[in-house]
Image 1: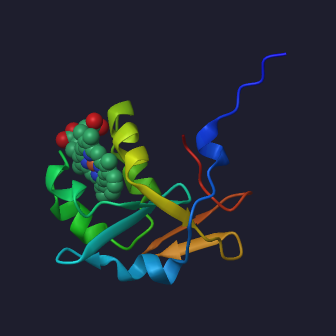
Image 2: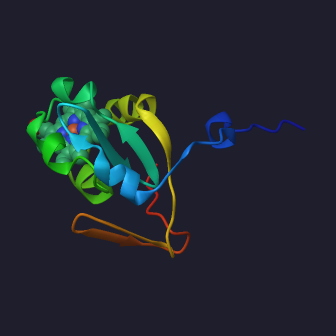
Amino acid sequence: MNIEIDRKECIEWKEIYPDQLLRHNDPTKSLWVAIGGYVYDVTDFCKKHPGGEEILYENAGKEVTMLFKDVGHSIVALQILEGLKIGQLVKSNNIIAIGNIEIKTLDGFCRFL
Ligand code: HEM
């Protein structure tokens, strides 16, 4: 029998709490965003972002899943994203509410990959 395992799913990611995420919103220090239940460090990437760095400054420290999806980012963007992953956002009562975006799904996260 041939069983394929997605190794990325096997990695135990560092747990990051919403209040930690929130603190990484300073362009002179560090910029993190959360997408689909994971946290990404965009500090170095923001200057290379084809959509401009300002939009990442504005949204740093926040849950940006819907914004990221709405732009219709390509597979290339998803690949870059994968390389920026630093941890898993800890759920709180299956609701993530950061900034002005609230996501509620059956398993606690909006998954789109
Ligand atoms: C955090 C990780 C992100 C990565 C790795 C990323 C990557 C990219 C890439 C590679 C592109 C070029 C087009 C494409 O290949 O899809 C792009 C374009 C763009 N991104 Fe992002 N992006 C990120 C986050 C965001 C967020 C949070 C927003 C909005 C709030 C955003 C808004 C845009 C816009 C407006 C464009 C320009 C689209 C166009 O001119 O056609 N991006 N991004």
